[in-house]
Length: 107
Image (cartoon, rainbow, N blue to C red; front, side, top):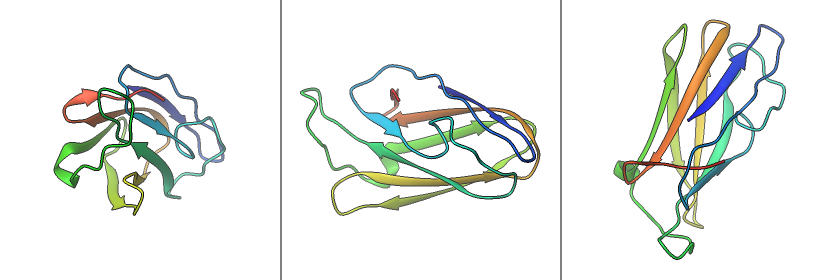
């Protein structure tokens, strides 16, 4: 899972889990974000050999836990990756967990 600190004008930090699939980008990489502004990161589903593996929305899950609930939207890209857009309504520390086929992904 990723631990994200959100401040009113602030920043965030991330810690990654384990898996051949990856998640990267704005919203996970320590970039500056503002409260109420959606952040977007990309999930790269991979098979057991590390190759890009196209997968359905049902196999991608993002959980955001913290002081407020999160709005999370999923957008499939032509290359098999998924853009995840998320936003929250309160400042604080949030934990983002990204799963592909039920397994945590790394950053």
